[in-house]
Image (cartoon, rainbow, N blue to C red; front, side, top):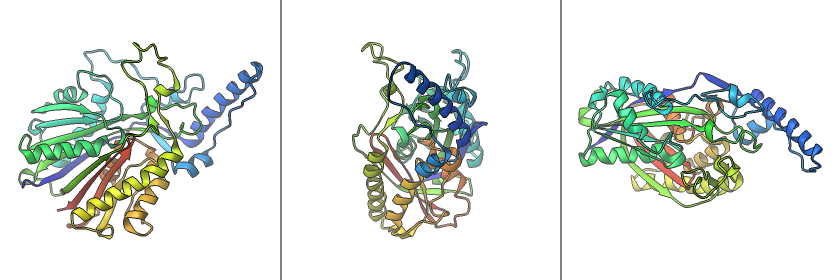
Amino acid sequence: MTNVVITGTGLFTPEHTIDNDALVASFNAWVDTENARRAEAGIEARLAHSSSEFIVKASGIHSRHVLDAEGILDPERMRPRLRERSNDEPSIQCEMGAVAARQALEAAGVAAADIDLVIVGCSNLERPYPAVAVELQAELGAGGYAFDMNVACSSATFAIETAANAIRAGSARRALVVNPEICSAHLNFRDRDSHFIFGDACTAVVLERDDLATSEARFEILGTRLVTRFSNAIRNNAGFLNRVTDADPQALDKLFVQEGRRVFKEVCPLVAALIGEHLQALGFAGDDLARMWLHQANRHMNDLIARRVLGRDPSEQEAPIILDRYANTSSAGSIIAFHLHRDDLAVGALGVICSFGAGYSAGSVVVKRV
């Protein structure tokens, strides 16, 4: 059987940063204006202020990187201000993806022309067609074929399994998985319960047949396992049918919506069971893991999942957290954690990359440092 290894990763981090204090100041300024409007209109219901303490306690997030801070922090706008690209310019996600991809290719010691498959997986794609992946393939000068996929926050792990299977099947020798997440564009910055959740980032991963790899830092993919279960607890109803159903394109349900407590209660046991059963099927136990690169959505979720898998409280090294400074970057989160926290692992060390989110969906990729 063909062994597949991860030989390089890349990360694009936007230059703009918003800390909790700045985000809260903008939100509270809008709340004051909205409450004044309601009072004048005779509406009794009042909106509550947010606070940095509330955000940290609820999520563990202290700051986030975004493509545009000015538009988000403007109480009269409260959404990014991004320039529309002409058809002759690289799209925003292609531009992000190219930065991360070139880093990953350099780390792997692989030329773009030697890539046979490009998969762009993320929660929201810039357009329905042509595929961002095909545009990125052309931008990089990659070969083979390319396509987009969307499994929300699990897009990276689902794409990694798809790429690994293509390599094992012989339809590709080397693959590139790219996750350009512009989460700030679908976040409702006027919702107290979620205005702090997301940030923007892009990751890239190079996968190769082991016998072709030249990189010294390799992680063999021992196995992948995926699961989906339908739920309305996390939802976004923006879509191409909105115009023909006469739906309001600015309605709140066209942005990110979630029932946070329900998600916590239902997703944590689902993910812990997925990882535990996957390890058992491969002949391992939870305490065989040296590292858990988990989806970076909420500190409390990660701690609980790691505790259930390991059978004890995880250390900072065993389950590294990057959401404190990146926030939730959807499918990119677990890959950011892998990108930043893997070099110290010894040969033979075992780890799991796991993402989870809307769907519900969850993906587990068990790897070994070789």
